[in-house]
Image 1 (cartoon, rainbow over the protein chains, first blue to last red):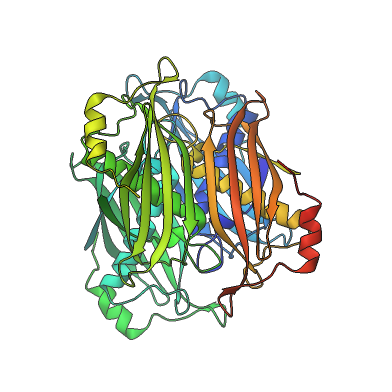
Image 2 (cartoon, chains in turn cyan, green, purple, orange; image 1 turned 30 degrees about the horizontal axis):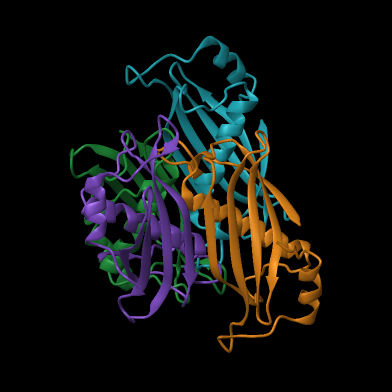
Length: 133
Length: 133
Length: 133
Length: 133
């Protein structure tokens, strides 16, 4: 399980007074990128071989400006060419679960424009973050 | 089925050269809001009784700056206190399916902070956009 | 003078109930890009030789969700390697001036990483949109 | 002089491979808000009496994904109902000046919808961050 912390920016709220739904996907992207870094993959536009095939977020409680949010990331499934990440977004001040998200990542060769098997070295790293639910 | 059209803005792309994943949720929100307007619900922060409980997007093909995207919205499920919207995002220049999304909307009393039954008038409107898949 | 129209998206507002200041710069970018198109320059990441050197926005009245905004763009100054664009953002429902912006664009050779003289053909186009203030 | 540090998010870049110009205004807003906190003003939508009257950013060098940016904020002018903030955005890895910004803040009574004199307590705080340029 990997963890980051962010503080909700003012521009990430909307006229309903809470965090706009689109902002949660900014947080999930940030969590994914830091997770990749933690397992040794530097996100670099010139040499990047993953695509986000799908992402989802369930909004459990409302989140607000200036809250500190902890975003936990774990691996929930490992396939031959793809893997699933699960996220929990928790308010660190109130310990409330704010949202749950997930992402399906596919290993992708941008030159050939096709998916490809997960490299051996990645598999090992992913397994160490695998959570059986 | 309800339909809107948007043009991809430059700031909605990212350093991979395509539309950033978070931007799709901007388009889905726009599609939802216009759908609500089309069925007679003006989105107004002072008198708004729906919450987005969950949203998801599957990224099928890459989308790019300046593409005109058609976002189709239909109702895929009607419950007692909630309903589901399905979206298709299609590039109008290439007719390619770019993404598929959905959203779960819950009827919500912000004062009591609890979900409530869908009003009769809304039910009728939703049924007219219901697609059996 | 060139003119575009946009409708304020919900996610472009913030918890103060109005348009977030950062969203205005989305509108100004959109206005610039459509202005460039109107004078025959397609914005294409692979062959783009302008940089935004500076941009500014004065917030005159508050703008709100769902307002239709007209963004007017004119050329206010033409230099040897740069030119200035002036923008007015007006609410089409109320005719109120919402904001005034400007942008300094520099002609730039991304390969050599240095500014370069404005091409002759651009000069003529810019002159036809020049407003003497 | 007040200082914050942020890390450039992937979604803040655009298809030109660098930070999109609109993202700089997200950083400037963040810097302003943290500056206000530092001088004892909690940004709270229900009790907030400042408006941003104008903001500007000069883009000096290109900024990129994952860079750590230091944003320095100082007070450059104090008027009777307004004050000016100056910002410098510096890449902490390269020490390069990336951008320079400023903001004009006006003390505002949202109920009466009119500007009002800066409160005495704020004046003292601002003076301690005043830089004579």
